[in-house]
Length: 503
Ligand code: NAD
Image 1 (cartoon, protein in one colour):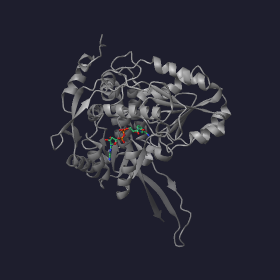
Image 2 (image 1 turned 90 degrees about the horizontal axis):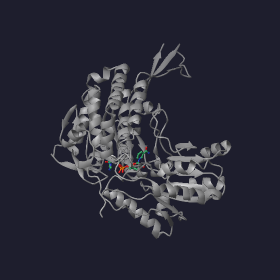
Image 3 (image 1 turned 60 degrees about the vertical axis):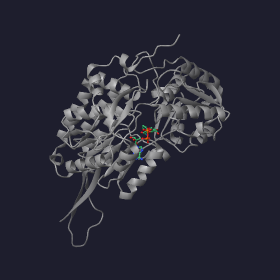
Image 4 (image 1 turned 180 degrees about the vertical axis):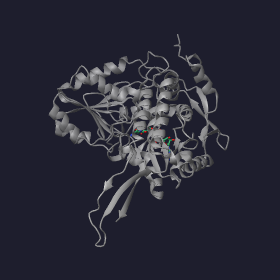
């Protein structure tokens, strides 16, 4: 008997989602929705079935250039410059409300984009929070008053102050693994600070970006302030980040592409922040709460089918509890409900596309070939779509690719450790430094470990927290440059001007 799998036609899609998918996903340039100049489009496939669900404009150089021109014009010569912080705040608050009102629809669209469960409102909540947080900051951007240290002999007094002015046109290039919160977290600080921007979503996830752009327009973003470009990274993305008219680049994606973007940015000395990949350690000490720690550690690597930059993909377990923790996570891996995000029963969805599935399967095979012991998983799931089994390896050689490289799939490497010293050396033995998770009941131990692990975000006694607008986000080493979110995003989107009045 052959199993029956849901097809896209059988999804319980809302009527407006169906209608949205039936139209070309166009670029939005200067407030106008338009196809690529070439007229070309590319296919968007549902990750759970690999059926084509929509077509998006395949932007080329001419489209990107038009978008930058529109953003430049909106920054240099339009009423946007005179808009107050309070008005920018209102736009962002209306945007937050619109995300809230359209939650169900947005969750369905993001599920078709990425494959994550459509009933999980987490990404919508993040989007709402980012919009509200930066709405609040839009009215709180200010400089300082300062007293210079020296006075020239003929001068009585100098009064100095700093102005924080919008940096100008921002280019945002974003990945596919969290397309809704990523879009909002890039757009919100740019609007809050009075910048204009061009945003390019990943070509694997063009759906949600188009709908969020429509909501931004409904929220009252003036034409040209936010411009959306759909299309391939190698053409549209690289043209965008090389344009000397761009004042600031914010990039989230792989370390490899991040490095190439950094080189392009340096050519024009464009300001840049980079949020890149990771190979983060999860650390379970002997005294951890064993009722929760293994489950939470499993979430850190199996959530979003492992497609999370902060994935705790290297799990270090103190020796005495090693077997117990591994078997608890094995049980979880073998009992998780896996299937399309449109079915509310499922806990884990598919990988984004067929080539990501092939890449993850290749890593699993490399792990087996390297002599590592496969505890569970290690293969794909024989059904339509890009599903793979949650996988655990132990006895892994420290030089093996699965130990060192970011896999971006549900693959966990578990390694025992003796003591803190031994652990820190191993946890830090990586080119990355994005996140870490620590489970222990000993407060001193937690504080010492958090201080010693080289990572930008550390969670103690819990699975990694989702990106929070008020918490700085970014990594050490090859996990990026700078910290996004929080108030530092305001610094990144503004230039400081020092003004001195000589009296
Ligand atoms: P990617 O680097 O392949 O693509 C990211 C974006 O860059 C896409 O929009 C893509 O079209 C564009 N792009 C590709 N080549 C380009 C080029 N030459 N010039 C300009 N733009 C180009 O990454 P991905 O596969 O979409 O996402 C997964 C990666 O993102 C993982 O490495 C993950 O760790 C990382 N990530 C990091 C964070 C973080 O905050 N640190 C968050 C999410 C994802």
